[in-house]
Image (cartoon, rainbow, N blue to C red):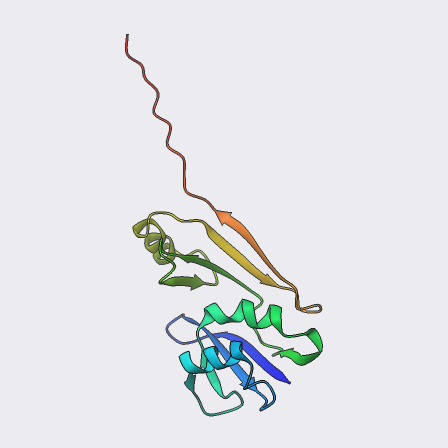
Amino acid sequence: MIKAKLEKNKSGKIIFKLKIDSDYKENILFKRAIMESKEIKGRYQYEVPLRFFIPICKNVGRENLVLDKRCILSYLEFSDYYDENYYTDIDATAKYMKKWREEGCPDIYRITIDKDSYEITKEVVFKKPKVVIKDFSL
């Protein structure tokens, strides 16, 4: 059984918490996630980077995954040109949009998790604005 939770910390960053049974620790996907995560105390064992959330949810069956009742079910995400840094937030705030413009206006996606079926949808909500320059020469 795998328990997962997405929550927002005091500084506004989205955190992915995970509790893994010993059966899944030998899976290569979970090994990679555990290597890059940090151990925490409490109900969940690990604080995992958010980029592992979608692969874990898609590769673990619905019967083996449990989302917390107070889990965030929708968030925004974009990455830089090389996919090194991922920027996430729940809402498109002024600070978030400023960072988006600094990174060259890549597409911003809204990731939504269906509470009942745990199906994840990813849709584009902001695109790079197109600039059209007309020639008015005589």
